[in-house]
Length: 248
Image 1 (cartoon, helix red, strand yellow):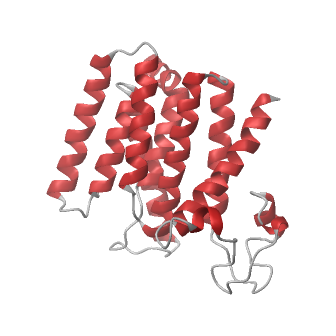
Image 2 (cartoon, helix red, strand yellow; image 1 turned 180 degrees about the horizontal axis):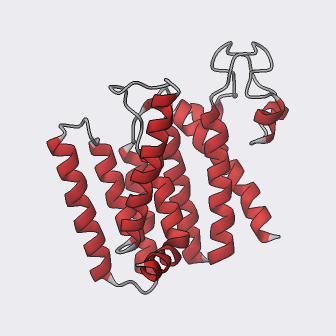
C-alpha cells in the first residue's frame, strides 16, 4: 500500500523534473508560475492532459491540439521516478534519513531529463545531489574507506576517459556525475553501477545504429545510463555481486 502511494508521489516529482528541464534554461520563475503548454503549438494544456503517465498513454504521445508527437522523455522520467520512489519506500520506508534519498533521486531525475533533452548535465543538480548523498552518508554508519575507494577509482577512470578522448568519449559533466554516484554507492556497488551503465549503453547504442536513428558520429547522452545503473546497483548490487561470485 505504501509503495503505491510512494509510486504516485514519485510520478508527481517526475513530472516536476521534466518541468525543470524544460523551463529552467529560459526562466527559472516559469517553473512555478507559467502554465504548461505544448512545445509545438504553444496551446495551454488542461489539467487532464497533465496526469503523469496516464495522459501520455491516452493521447498516444501526441498533443491533443496539434497532434504532433510529445517526447517520450516525459513518460520515461515520470516512470523512472515513480519506480524509484516505490523501491525506496519498500527498502527504506519513510524516515528522516531516507528522506535525503528521495531528494537525491529527484536531483538525479532532473539530471536525466536535462541530459535527454539537451545532452547536458547541470552542475547545479549534481551539486545538490552530492550534498544530499553526503548528509545521508553522515547520518548513518559509513565505511569511509570504501567510499574513498569508490570515489578515487571511478573519478580517476572517468577523468582519463574525458581527458584522453578530449570530451568525445566522455563529457566532464559525466565525470562530476560519477563522483556523486560513487559517494552514494561506494565500493563495490559503484563498480556494479558502472558496469551496468556501459553494458546497457552499448546495447542501446547498437540498437540505435541498427535502426539508423543514430550514426557513428552522433552523441548519445550517457548520464541516464549512469543513473539507471546506479539505481539498480543501489537496490540490488549486493545480490548481483553474490550471484557473480557464486558463479565464478
